[in-house]
Length: 138
Image (tube, rainbow, N blue to C red):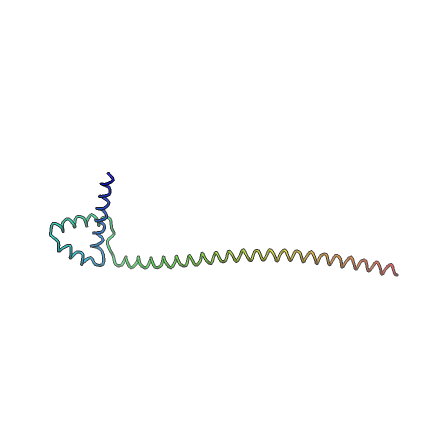
């Protein structure tokens, strides 16, 4: 059973190859070679080619051009996407560093506020103490 399936697959492959051969850019050369064969061989190949044509899309130079353009556009978009992804990764890393630096600055800011508050409190206490000393002397 596997052998029969393998043979069927090989025949299908041959049909598709023959259909593509008579549909490609050099089809006139290939058709000329087929026409130079015996009529019996030509008839056999014709059956295989017709069967293969059911499995392939006929060659169309306009479609080929469109396909090539789409392929180029796809490659350009893929490249732009990769660049964009790389930029996103760099931006995310930069953002992480900026957040880390911002947190450090906020901590330093809190620390300085505490120092200012303590200095202010100490200054007020000193001023009150000086005022009391002056009042006592009077």
